[in-house]
Length: 165
Image (cartoon, rainbow, N blue to C red; front, side, top):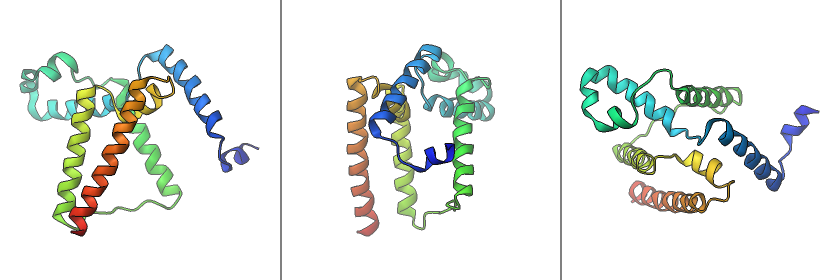
């Protein structure tokens, strides 16, 4: 019986209702949930290991987000990465693909930097925006999703133009 449940597609209304209810419980138990915090903390710990006490001169790491190896969202992020890896390996869909041209590396780097800057400016990540704000019918969630979709569309056009042009 449980295996049959995972073989069929859920009705989107039921799936979104379940996400909304679970989101309410998540918010009541731990507050706002963001995935970007784990990656930010890992970056801070790496920077602290490399820079030592010099990291304290930067206000973000000193006042806003002091590096702490016990920060629980690090382990959520690592768990998602590990789960995705295991899932890809078990489904025989895992392979390593390296960009062949310098232009691809440049575009990937710029895209990653822009995503990171956006996460820090908004102080939230796209995952928590979608699964946190949207089911709560928060207009900010819908505006953010609209911006993410528009940015992905424009980015794909630029990517295609540079790589094919």
